[in-house]
Image 1 (cartoon, rainbow, N blue to C red):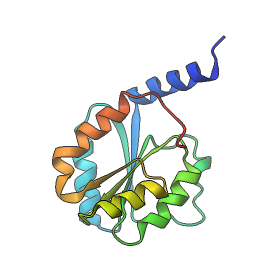
Image 2: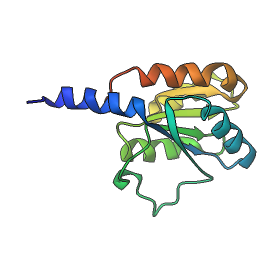
Image 3: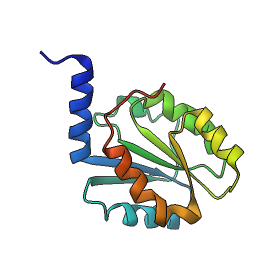
Image 4: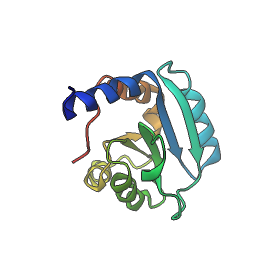
Length: 142
C-alpha cells in the first residue's frame, strides 16, 4: 500500500512527464513569447495563456491544475500571488518582473511565490529553473 508521501512522489513523477504551465500577463506579446519559449521544453506538454484571473475562476477546482504558473507581477500581481497560492498549493508559482530589486522578489516569495525571475533574464534562467522544479518531488507549499 502506498503511503501519502509515496503517492505525492508518484504524482510528481507523472507531472514531470506531462507538465503544464499557465502564463498570466496583461502583455500579449510577452505572453506569446514566453509560451513559444516554454514550448521548446519537451517536458512541457501544455501551455495556457491568459491576461488575468477572473474572480469567478476557481483554479483550485480545475480537473488538472497547472504544475507551474508564470505570473507577470509588474502591475499589482503580488496580491494575485496570495490568491493563487491559496488556490493551488502544489503549483510552482514563478513571478516575472522588471523590477531589479531584491526587496520585490522577497515580497513575492513572502506572498507565496516559489521564485522570482527578472524579465531580462528569462532566456537564460527560465528553462533551467523549470527543469530543476520538474526533478523535485511534488510538495505542498508551506
